Length: 122
Image 1 (cartoon, rainbow, N blue to C red):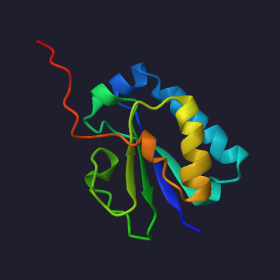
Image 2 (image 1 turned 120 degrees about the horizontal axis):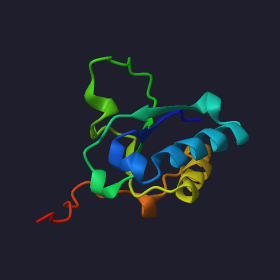
Image 3 (image 1 turned 90 degrees about the vertical axis):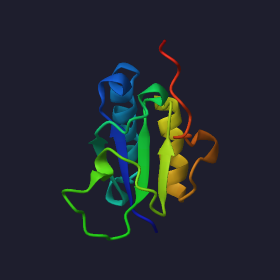
């Protein structure tokens, strides 16, 4: 059975878009489904994809020692087992917890596309 680290962005744009509700839903669902021992939930910093928020990153916990100076809390690392979800809502988070975390089945249709350019502000 895999273990995960699930990060919900706490940047101002993501928070304005509902990240606090997404985080609260993750916390509630992990508890309700008995998944807290398998998934560490935390608030990550801004991942830089503000125009696609609220953003969520799920990484497999491979037992790698956590480096406190690593940029992983605010940057995609490209590691095996890393999944980026964008435009998250409480409903989408319920699905990520039920499928990705509970069944080790990432929800492909909810994957974010980090190469999507930000809308032109000019």
